[in-house]
Amino acid sequence: MPWVFIGPGSAYQSLSANPIAASVRIWDSFVLVRARKAVLHEACGLPLAAVAAGALRCLGAEPMMVDAMKGASRESVADFLVVGGGVAGLRAAIELARAGSVLLLSKGTTSQSTTYHARGGIAVAMGEDTEDMTLHFRETLRAGDGLCREEAVRVLVEEGALEIRRLAEWGVPFEFRQHSTASRGQPNVVRARGGSIGSEILRVLTAKANSLKSLHTKRHCTVIELHVQGGCVRGATCLDESSGQIRKVRAAAVLLATGGLGQVYAETTNPPGACGAGVALAYRAGALLADMEFIQFYPTVLPAASGSRVVLPEALRERGAKLRNLELDRFMPRYHEAGELAPPDVVSRAIITEIQRSRGSFVYLDLTELHEGEVKLRFPDVYAACLESNIDIASDLVPVRPAAHFAVGGVATDLHGATTLEGLYAAGETATTGLHGASRLANNALLEGLIYGTHAAAAMIAGRKLSARREPPPSSAGADFAGSVTAPERAQLESVARDVRNLMWDQVGVIRDERKLKLAAERLNAIRWPDRARADRSYVETWNLLEVARLITRCALARKESRGVHYRADAPLRNDSEPPQHSYVSLQTGVYFRPDTVPEAHAR
View 1 (tube, rainbow, N blue to C red):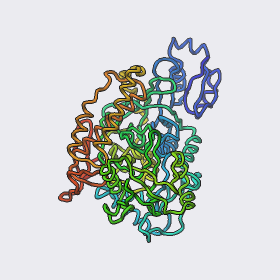
View 2: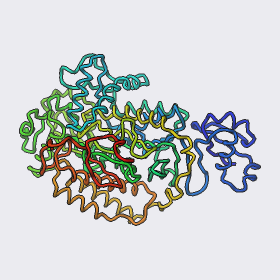
View 3: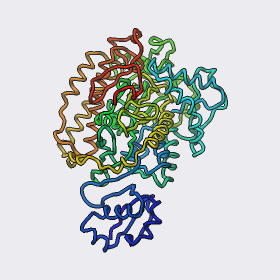
View 4: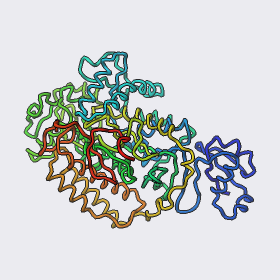
């Protein structure tokens, strides 16, 4: 007799006493039931999962997770569905698990998330000194170049210390400064002892999540589409890569926390899976997106033929590292009075200009004036990573160039993660609350994921409608997706992805203009796409990548000014003749501009 997933561990007592079960045991917070032959016979051929689920309802226990053990597709039910296993997704899932069953879907392992590779720190005012908090608030607004939503910034600044203390209690080894940093004009930055801060936070959050019986994580799952019924999101269809099967998940609320979209560009610091899945899913479902043109490029990244790029942090330049062109001339003072400490977008543009002038592919970061011991002691991860490329940063000139790093725009949400579709929420880099405005302040990203992941969870719990998750998903959900791609189709997908990345880097990169943007839009719209949708991760990721590239280009073409990280050589000045406006786009509308950042202000 086969085992079958039935429901949460809380159903164990009633099930074990019921005659339907020949034996019952707990497995990974779910109940496994071996049903009696007589019960199966009386079911007249009904699937075993359906029989067991019916029995569970008779016992008064609602089945939270039901998996059919046969057939080409599977169906699961949970109170909450979280898509993405980075800092925002995990933090939200932990909160949601207090109120119901949670299914967290992730494309890969923890080490493949964007969060894992975060090596900097977290900007947060930890002490009682209000001057530190004021400084963090002011510097975030300054970086946002007139487009920050002040209320979103205030939430981050005021709630940051509490969230960091909570993580410290859970086991994150933070290093806390004991003095005010306001006198230096820089927000306080908390770092992790002994390792990168991103990996340490993920380690602790993962352990916390694994301890919660109502939270179930399924890795190697690629979400294909969201289920939309009457303007409400009620679940998703995904590809279970471990079995090759299409799965349907029903849920009262869905959170998109899939991270970044840097893989849209040929040069990026983001991991391979960062193709903008959450943004593409929300857009195809009909949700509103905002500020998609704002892509932050990290200025100093070690080029790599393959694999993750190595970020040479701004802290190196703060310590005295200099940027030099191929003639070994220090060039930054010609572009900004602050030299190497100019705003990141200014440094990126200067580097690109020098690369184009010299017809090279990089400039140099020179650390040779720094003490070798200090470099190794203060930047051990960077030193070791560069050494793998046979570069000793303490004695060698380091070739660097900009790379796509952070998506400032994304799915438009309010301060509680709610989108313009009922039942759909977004958090972290996938979302835009107006916190970052037109450019993100360094070290604000991890805190954003933590705080707004928590806010989204609270809103999902408050807005849960239990009856909604019992509604079946549309019968057509997932039905249009055929089998795996053929060898010729895979080659076509790889070609499309390569063309999109190169086109975006060349035409929609650090320095833009109308001619480049129109050319990019024309070529992106002309890309041929396979006639039939395929249930294959490479197909879905390339589909998302192309969709997101088109959206970035459309919004960049529509914004005829330079602001924050969006720079147009044909419109190099900020438009101060009218109030700052955010760009918006959805499946039902073209690109338009409005000064507000609250989804409720737009008709649902």
